[in-house]
Amino acid sequence: MAAIQHLLARLWADYRTLNPQARAIHDLLESRGERVVNDHIALRTYDDPRVDLNTLSAPFLDGGYVPKGQYAFPEKKLFARHFEHPDKECPKVFISELKVGEFPDSVQRTVKSLIDQAPADLPGRADFPVAGRTWTTAFPEYESLRAHSEYAAWMAAWGFRANHFTVLANALKTFKDLAELNSFLKEKGFKLNAAGGEIKGSPEVYLEQSSTLADQGEVRFLDGTHRVPACYYEFARRYPLPDGQLYEGFVEKSADKIFESTNKRS
Image (cartoon, rainbow, N blue to C red; front, side):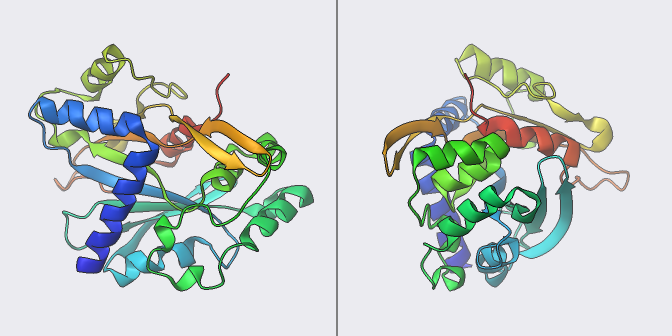
């Protein structure tokens, strides 16, 4: 357990550094007397065998996590799995990968050129999920990727790290539902992802989700520093299945819109 707890702590520390709004929201909730429970962590990657979902998930599997659900997002050309740990104090882990082969040759060449720069030992390292960006790229390459896939561009800019953490709304005592939490966040000046509605999902599918829009972060490209979408904070409320157990999976239609929290905004 020590190794996985260390990895989770490093992911949180890196994420908080990149995402000041997460620090602020976390502190706001704690100031109300809340204990903030993390429902899940999400990571992104490309489907190149050197860094794909199976490879990126290895440190979690070594730490006791087990594969659970799998999900397809045809429109965004993504595939994902989620993993759970026998110790329920550990958050779920959601890892997605971009199906690079479904994009034009120019995108495939750019992504390959990025991965070619990664250290050869990266796939076997215990810190792979928090290695960050292991390549250099120019801003025009980032923009070219973004024209085809916001996800591809985000990976080019930020690399391997937590894309978001998620507050489990069920554990909050001072909000009656997710709508009330969203109202509180907006009153405090945080902008929410409205794609597909501020609340994605419903009690009928056993999961409701909302999220902030990603903070802008500075990235040093080969041709200068630019501000681009970084990370965001998600909020999830889970509902009991007919057998009384809380639903632990994810809803593809909702997750599809949550991905858009890192889309570039005008």
